[in-house]
Length: 502
Image (cartoon, rainbow, N blue to C red; front, side):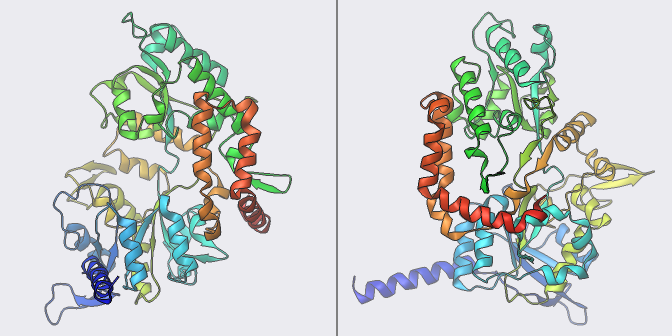
């Protein structure tokens, strides 16, 4: 390549970075509330945000939410966003270029990238600041900080979900009544009910076109309740080793059960190609008896009219020993707000986030601006205006506490039946603290162990691998493909931090 060509390539990269970074990085500049002289100057920050909803034409830097929050906190926080498409790629470019951001968000799915930035000494440790802010230090649940805490350092502020435990089991009550069946409680009872839903024409159309169970391609819908029932969804410390769920015998039993459902055509055979969108379309057909899904499905807002008149939410199947099952979650956070090194006036930015966890901030987070989106009459909250779909982004964090007060706010949007579903999902969920707390180890990333797990899971459930006879072969392959090093690293970390993970 000629020198001229190389210089042209460098110029194009620099131009791309310049385009992306326009408007980023106020670094806590101060400006007056309306730009005029004589007004009190206010700290102003721009935070890069990844959102996945239509902003409906709303300006990300000048709108009623930003103005309201400024009025309440004395701090102005504006959003800078390149959009969700390629968000992480653009964030990587900005961080690598040295462009100074005031803050940025990273979703739970990209937590490892956040921790990578921390390992590279690019983030502010927030631990020394938190004692100054009572809501951040006392109201935010302690477990919410686990995914971004390492050796006493805290690398971001969590957006902790009030519905962090968000899944319930749905069953077609109309079919139960038609076939004169009781609500199942054990794994065996679920199997018998799902088999009846498959074979006994529960919709009475005279066709063999119903399935007992609906699942999606990663089994987060449909399979999750049975993985939990077999106690196959949490890390286990055994014989001096910390093992991921997929290497334990309980997981083998779960795979064998799911294969049985496939062989007997109880599980919709299209599950390997069912995305979240297709999953919802399948529910609309009313051809499936059981699945697990979000608590808010019951509102019917995502489905055809009347579909959820047929479904009720129930507890997941019990463990084999008869004890109640709780579905494990790796985190109860949606995303995190990190503050890069070099950001000025950090205390002012943290003051803003501290307010959003206050009682007033919590009401704003759930209902919007008082007397614009809601009003209170004799202790009852009433919705009076529509919030923009991006409203939730204009505070960026939430404390996640699911209290009676929070339920009263939610009643402005949801009926009692839907809120009852959230109560059920909260009661039947728990946090796997080990999974939530595992640090990022860059030397393990290249092994791509999750891909091995995914491939074997699908083959075992479809019957292309016999889990009963090949499970040990799979675990041996996992260990030989970098798993042994990963397990050794995880185990050493676990032994060192065991007391805090109980």
